[in-house]
Image 1 (spheres, rainbow, N blue to C red):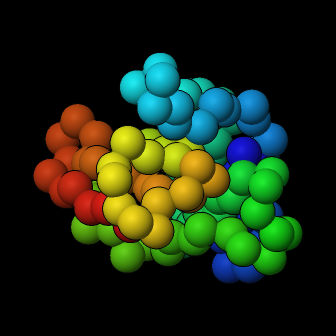
Image 2: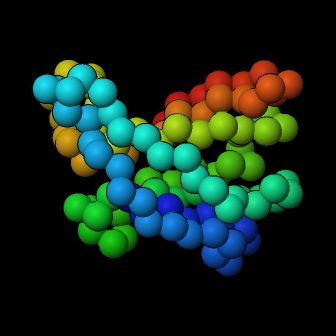
Length: 107
């Protein structure tokens, strides 16, 4: 997957990570912990896509709209859900407020 973090339109972080998609045979999604993210608060936008997706099809989230002082983000590639339109390369974002923060949101 490719991950970008922007602030006011300028890229402040990017990485490419190998993460296996959900597999019905394995019944689990892959995961990777991102390192090197900014520690300071800011008006960030998160952009995520898989290598299989077209370059302009980023899943984005304006982190400034999340109602929390701090966030933890889980990026899910593929899904165990049985939605008819679910695909192996679907990108889902799950946000939870970190310790001391009281917010949970999904996109």
